[in-house]
Length: 254
Image (cartoon, rainbow, N blue to C red; front, side, top):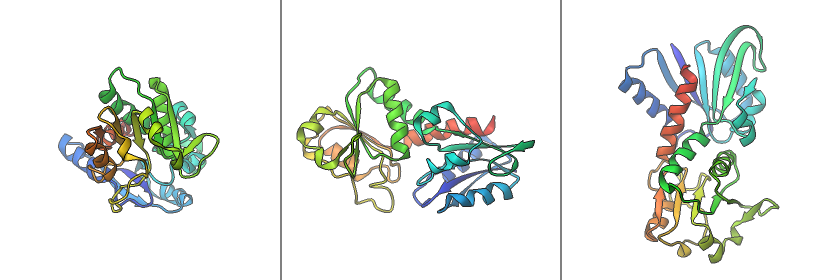
């Protein structure tokens, strides 16, 4: 049996286990299982990896996408640039001196950037609207990198204004109207807190705006409903989830 895990805390919002179980059944993939592994403290990863000889890889979600990097033996060049990892391949190699344990090689990747870039490209085509990226965590870093590779100018927005990020108080009508692509990378609106959304001026949205929410549970978030009321184009996070999951499977199974 080969095992894949999802690590993070909390995990109640995640569809990853259901997605992979359905994929294995649909495609007749035998000898693989996918389990959730709630993990509040990233240091417990050492025991988790060392104690399970069937482990072939794991996905990483909130809040460990950055902290996990210090425990990896190798990191993909794009993930290094982004500064966050959400996919780790586990290999067992006799004689290898790994950071976690002897004989175990951990190699990190960022498939979020692949999933987001592919999903967004379907929507915008040749357009390159200026973007606001709400949030500055690990998912935000992948989004910003993807925007850069697409040639899209962006500004990040944080709860605390800084030299590199706007604050939410800076988002007046002119800023909203001047950025036709608005991306939510925060957990606001995620199950079970479905009555929350980033605090921006939704009355300044127009039908030429695009709202992209990385949250996929629920599929129709309050953030997206605000956009729909303004007749903006809205995109939920499920398509991105599918694309990054399939990219992860390519890494795990090779």
